[in-house]
Length: 337
Image (cartoon, rainbow, N blue to C red):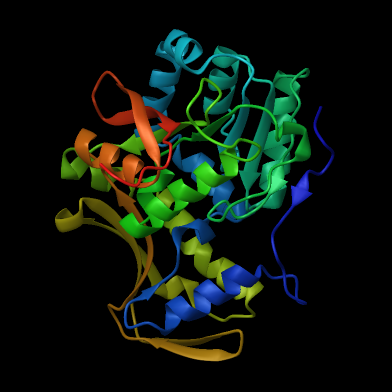
């Protein structure tokens, strides 16, 4: 059963604006390198644009991850088992999430997302495919620990974090998120040393040919460019801004030193604008850094997971070794090697 409109945990100010969004944008725009956290790309319009991105020919991650989910369902059933509450960090894809739910026979499904309308629409769509599955949508910023619905508090849990969203974060933020996920999923349990310990199924994109990577984040149809520019439109709409969006050009860059694609909005001329009454300027060529997408090796992905309190159990890749899905189990705290 879908619990009506779900639970809303986003803090909004008197103008109805997400307090964290306003704070992050204004702080990020004051820096020498203007930047905003990638999660703010995903308002309702941005979430829909990202769904469109997953269908362009150049964007391989969704197809690669779907291939793994389709081909490894028996492994998922054997290793995860039935009866878990699946907690998805980010509203579920109409393609990937049903594949996982069909494989493991969950007791409940809890999608978490900061884009409330998109979250509820996705939950309603999924409820139609799984009419007997209890679904409890929660509108929340999953970058922080989230209090889950009481109905699932005593259930063993599986976190699901597909799409390599973990790659959007610098290492310290990624580790913080993994620890926060562990805390969310541990709710109602005192330790993680038995069969019911929290598990996490997480997508991580792999290091590969640079031209393949750059094309995936700058498709010929310009869908990714619109997705990137949409965050400027969101800032204008929610923060009473006047950014000249037509003066911002989308650019995808490969940063080899840290193995990541970076997305930037590049000023094509000198511009000035206000956000929440605060004045900002950009010189021609200056950028707003809007997203990172880190790429991983097996070693770097394992190290990241263990730093966040997760012990890798098994790793799968697609037939072209472009993408990986990793199943991990919550680690018990240790004070010594």
